[in-house]
Amino acid sequence: MHKFFQEIKGYIGSVVLADGWVDRDVLFATLDNISNNFDEDYPRALADLQYIFSENKDVANQTAQTVSLLKRWSEAETSVSTFSVVAAGLKYFGFSTDKSDKDDGYILPTLMAAVLADVPNDLDYHNNLHFRKVVLHIIRMISAHNDIWSSGQNHLNKNRASLLIAAAAIHDLGHEGDGNIIDRKYHMAQVERRSYGLAYPYLKEAGFSEETLSDMNIMLTTTDVSPFGDPISPASQMRRAYEFHYGSDDGVSEDNEDSTLMLSNDLKILEDRGMLCLMCLMLHEADIMNSAAVDYDVTCGESVSVSRELGLTQALPEGTLLFLERICSGQMLSDSARYLGSANLAKILQRVMKDYKDGNKSYM
Image (cartoon, rainbow, N blue to C red; front, top):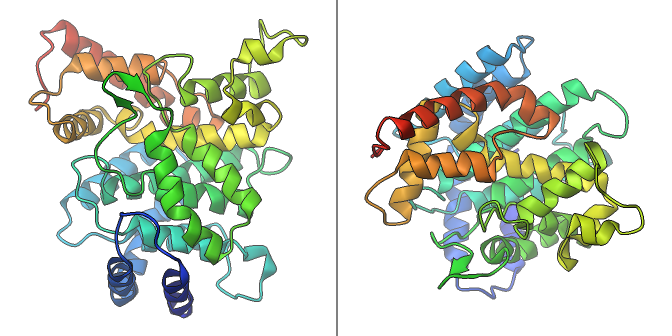
């Protein structure tokens, strides 16, 4: 793996900086830190992810192992890098580090995305640990999905898997703690599009095609869940398109699909791209998995982190309930998220509803 670091350094050096995010020295320092600690971090990451790929596919065991891993990550004095977690995930999915292997042409841009994810960000919620959690959940979901769909058109091949991992790594890149509603006016996917814009030149330089990057842009856009539960929300639009392709299409008129699906111009491509819809949904559900579908205590902790980032003094069950019912619609949609998280989400929702009825006392 070390042979890739010099190439990635070259990509960083060749990109012309056009945004006031971080300067090149910060990127070089991030890469040096990853490289210097890789021999220690990588075996830790391989051990961390081993349970996902073990023969024990029992969901309760998977959940318990995930909760334990999240606790170790949050309490560790020295965090394992997201780069190492990505590298370990690629290893388990059968990627080769032999650059002559043409089937693994996505490995370098995916590792480039992982470097960007390790650029220091110390927000209360949208921080480096959040990026690592979403990478963890997308790896879990890809593995579960391909256990369900071991072949056929819904199978996630290496290119699709690596694109999902790369998107998970950079989905909130450069986040500054703001949102897409400013002065009560909604700016569609403004934060997500900035993340894409920051990552784009590096991922392009590292080898992702314009077509691949265009798909990534759609994927990041549809992680925007605001306004909560509103049909205009990119996440809501994507979920409608997913249900059209893979679920119930009740009420969708063949003569008037556009108006029924109510997709914005930027997302109309989802009408014709079922697999892209699936990948968008998986990324979205990996993004919300830690808050919604792992464990009650984990959900409460995430609610506290979000509240602190927003400058609030309370993290009320009422707000968590709004998230679970309006954003998550009380359910997961993708096969992998349903398999891994549906039972957990049901239990969490029941506990949070009880908290609300018992006085709506803050989790902080």
